[in-house]
Image 1 (cartoon, rainbow, N blue to C red):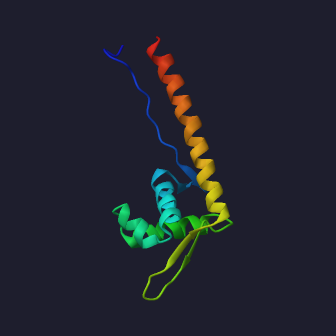
Image 2 (image 1 turned 90 degrees about the vertical axis):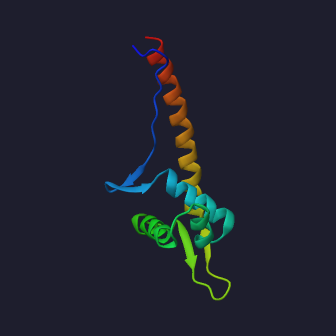
Image 3 (image 1 turned 135 degrees about the horizontal axis):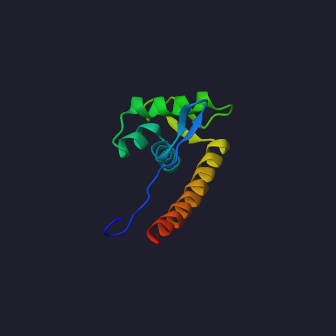
Length: 115
């Protein structure tokens, strides 16, 4: 047995057609886009390149039958990024799933340490 306590850790990824659709990083990106209204600003806050952020959004939009984020090019002020209603549902669903998963991990960790 473990000298101290065991711990179980895990992460959730949602796949679409065996390809990663969304996980913690993309959820954070969506949350920052929602907060800031800009893909460029969201990427900068995450220390992610604009190109990588754009690829992530484009991949999600193409994988689903509804747009997750609407991107509009801008002029001097820059573009606008907006989370769609479907994107909002993804955020809520993922957060609920993550919460349930954390409860599961806690329960399983307790069982493991009770052995």
